[in-house]
Image 1 (cartoon, rainbow, N blue to C red):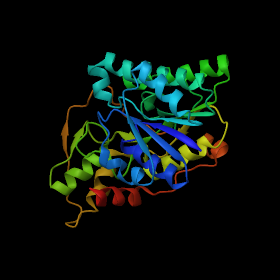
Image 2: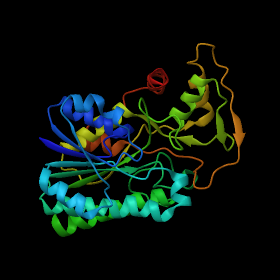
Image 3: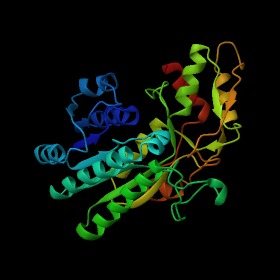
Length: 311
């Protein structure tokens, strides 16, 4: 099978590339390397994956690449993924996440693509968890609190439209807070990697808010399993990919601190809450279990240890 992965040099994308080459696929990576890293692709490219550098916002580039490569499956992970940046630069967020995605969807439809797997967000699309029963199911009304969550949801609606117009075969995976090796410990997003990096460097972790806010953490290896499962089915619409468990940030920090050689002495400092951050979040993975045969199998402690050890 020939597959194309946008954002394949990124944290999640590079793990996906490894899995796809591992199962014998011919893999083409599209990435502009604005946030992805070539070093993430070392194992994938050693196994035969090819990198085509370019920007998904470039319509001519996307059209010519899809026409030349003609993959049977596209995994679309390229995105502007930072909540704070989406609020500060909403035009950038919309251009990358919406316009870039529409370029890819349209080009994929034109070549008669078999399957389109879109990495959406379960952490930002639902909005404030305190207004609903958690874990959130796909059937509830979404109320994003940031432009990032909105832009991802807009792409989901484009996929619905193309399904009606062209019978375009797609699925949107609403990912929880994904963590694991290769996540950038110096980035704006990715609490686990940031805290793990601070633990390794002896820094004090910073919590924006009081630390009682909750997130649904899901290990990258489990997410890749869900993506592969989704690519092998014709299931359509939005599917949550998460643990279904609310984990408070203070509990997360305590667990990461317990992995230190010096014991659990990893005490945070607190700062002003950030606009766009929800207080509570967890997503219901029941549909993934029923329709994909998938559930998260990596415990938080096991995943955190693997992440800390990788930094």
